Length: 225
Image 1 (cartoon, rainbow, N blue to C red):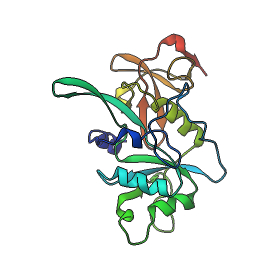
Image 2 (image 1 turned 90 degrees about the horizontal axis):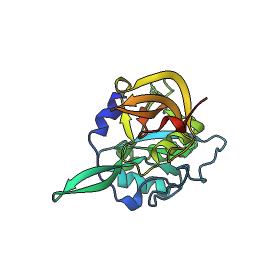
Image 3 (image 1 turned 135 degrees about the horizontal axis):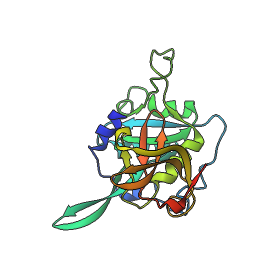
Image 4 (image 1 turned 90 degrees about the vertical axis):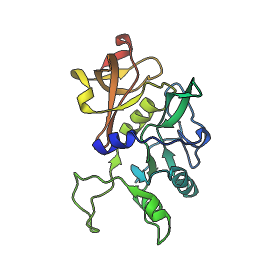
């Protein structure tokens, strides 16, 4: 968690036409009522893998994944920045230097484990240190359950600039109940209600990776499940 929060403070710019909800290539962010592309369907032997990219090499990594024909997702969000004295909405990575691929272990290995070339130092697995080491004496890659990843995509694939990565210390949970957002731009998102920065939000957890908070959500939009 701390590694991701530290990385979050070192944001990098990407061209908006090469980011967001992706399938084989990285088109402009696609927004829908649920925030999720219908192209993401559960497939046998496929998992969501978290990949790390060396600083300022994300575009190169995007090209590698695109050429491999692998479905991918880079969570983005808008921030307000001042340029020449004027405020401007800028689209930047929510998790700088991290992105997600949906493929088989063999497919993910083909992206990460390249032979003696530049790609080896560009893309690496984000490892799951809660599991035993594999035969290569490294922990296995962190994988995200399909439903959990789709929920994460629903929470992060939005134009709302108030979506943010948070720490557990920032989350003042109202109860231990899970809720489902039943209306608005975050419809379908499942998580826990918390008060963050003075606002009621829903917090979505990707176990072993991060917590993400939606923007403000009215109580009438929430249903306990």
